Image 1 (cartoon, rainbow, N blue to C red):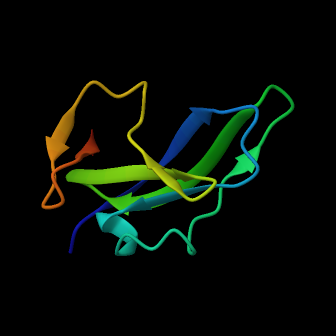
Image 2 (cartoon, one colour):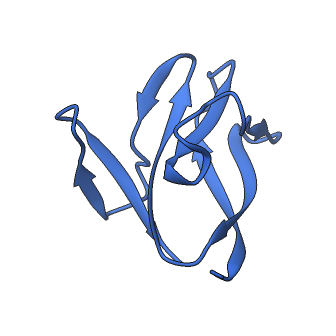
Length: 87
């Protein structure tokens, strides 16, 4: 069984109304991981996911964004890019 680790995803988007996290660890469902905004405009979500390499995106007011602070990306089947986190 894969070991899980808790990590915090962050996105600075002070004007956003809603931000969610979607990735292979939640079947790309933005409804399951809503992020919370702090007083500085940074959205955060702490997630426990299995160790390994995972692809993800932020969903900002309905638009899918790669993580601007993540340098590791992969081209997906739709021709756009996903951010990659390795744990």
